[in-house]
Image (cartoon, rainbow over all chains, first blue to last red; front, side):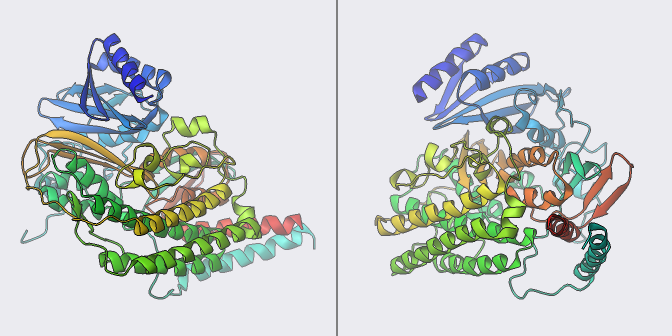
Length: 160
Length: 415
């Protein structure tokens, strides 16, 4: 069963002109371009049993913002990784394929400033306070320092 | 008595109750049921019917993921344990497993069993807490008191094993910090028998007590397909019949060595969810009894260097509320490059919002409690009536009273 799932993933990856890399037993990572992503995830959730999306991780990789979609089935985790440039952080939303992704995309929007096209709740904040200054960079970027956030939000404590 | 005569009297009573609860709070003694964490849901109404629910969370967001990027690997383990005050152990367990996966060291056999025992004790106490809260929200305070008393039995065991009731700080990388105390075996097995007895008794109550049946039966129906698409986890997936449990599907700790089966049900309402959680307590009690009797000897910990090799790894565990997920990325230093944590409540929130559509305001507390939210209370709830364009705000306690009065009124009308 698990072998067939991995074979299916290999096949899907080959059709998307990429390769699946086995990180370690039970963990597979697939790196994809933005334009391939939606099609790949659609095929993943409809053709394979790996339908459950655990979460979406966003991470600052210097020039790019990495977005990882974590799917799992039984003993296999499938990480689908894609990148968006930091200057223009725009990604395509997968909400119409996986409706449960809506809050995870909002979280990345708040924390890393990535705009997901197609997510109906992109105009709202989920985690950041309403008073978050518009010109302050997203908090989870490596260039945003906690001291700066504290200062701008008026949370600076004397003597610290 | 005609309906018209009942209504004004009820209204006055309701107003009186609200005044009482808002202004004269009676302290409940050392164990206060105040799980008041701020969350905000905007309910869009049509008359009394809910059209849409818009969540606004983050009032208690402390920026742990950012903080983790400036702290050593070990310190993070105890920081992430403080994410939650109920399922604290499973946070450090999952984070620990994610980091252990990057190293070459193995977790000792005995440590795996201790991890399993503490994780299951945590599940029992979390489920008991939830059953009690459910009693509170439907207005069945006696159940609440009984259940929370029984929870003390489990918390005493946790304290005896770990030294703490809530933040156990039991985990270390590749092992646990404390061994099981001598002579605990009989005591644990005896207490687990007590837990099983009580769970069976509560199942009987839940099935026969009118208040419970009225408020929970038929409520919270959702199709299996939608729950799967919304990525529901834990009991919220199992109560519609999905067999999704990481303990069974992707075993960690010592779960592959302990015989057990997970509980699912088909009814898919809050009443079934109540019985499901009570059944899960029985399963957990049996797992603990088995693990205690079959515990292997040996070391409990392997010491690992403070520098974690470069790489990325994800790990997930079955917390009391469902799947908990950690992703770590190391660049080969003393501090992590990125730690991502996802708690089960966030995963279950879309499902709860979907269930609420089409229900009445009176069902809101019960449905939102059904997902066992980590954010506890529904304080600062605001309402928007699309018909009259009126907007108002209620506190969690006002909402609870409204729910109870609504169903009391309903019952009187039927009689």
